[in-house]
Image (cartoon, rainbow, N blue to C red):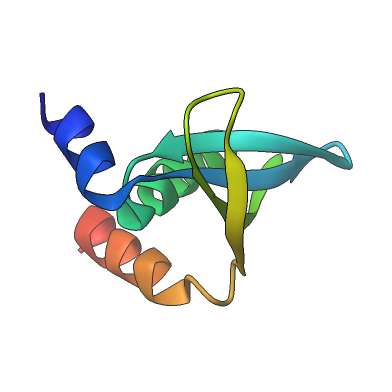
Length: 90
């Protein structure tokens, strides 16, 4: 299975985070940063802006035993967002 292979290669899980009614929510989960951003952007578009993508968190380890390794703002992943919008709408 490709997802398991991706997870084994990177060792990380990425969570796309956003705001909905002033509450932080998880919008997407992926084994690669670009997939996580793509799914978060699809969520934002489908919600017609009611849920706003804000950042991506990077975790390693098994569920329940994971450690946060990093976090990137929407601005920091803007290249992935531009690629998604280009591929999706052009």
